[in-house]
Image (tube, rainbow, N blue to C red; front, side):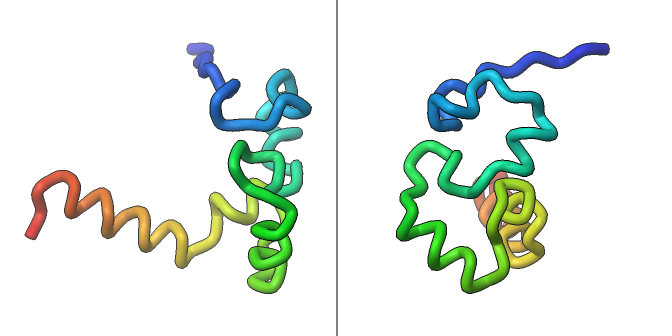
Length: 74
């Protein structure tokens, strides 16, 4: 089943009409609100693409913990 999503608010204009593969290969600065300075800091953690950021185990762990709290887990 095809899935559609409106990514306009998540991505810079240059990446809005790209495929998912192209978006994941894009620099992290392709995300709305991420500046080149932010990207430099992330690069020091070996995170250079949007895919790297999404797959980073520490970011995933932190997101999971925050989701648990938001769901009411104690």
